[in-house]
Length: 142
Image 1: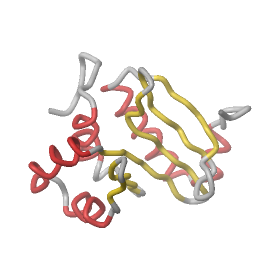
Image 2: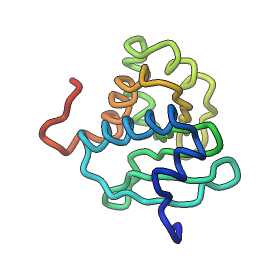
Image 3: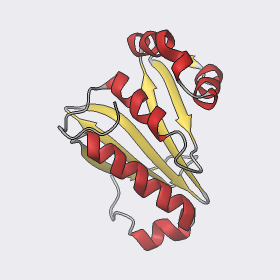
Image 4: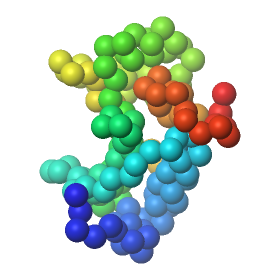
């Protein structure tokens, strides 16, 4: 856990105005679909911050921030990988490429995206739905 949660100004100076806007839009999109706990942590060696979406001890996804870069991570276990693979042709080439290039570990596939715009957001929500059905009524994307 972090001692202090970074303020908007710090995030803007860290990742830049454009990427911080994308970060906020992605958070809003997840929040529209999911009622989750939000946990700020240090980002480890590769990232300055980690912002996790969790509920009931299970992580839905995490966002990461470092200088001029944001990350969106989702971890798929075996069943989730099978679900994705059965529907993979309905995802963008970029999502397919990242999925294919991501190493599979004993505990699953740790998919890391580094969005620079909102183009993959529909795919992100569909990937999240593989992990967990939205638990908010006004879930936007079908």
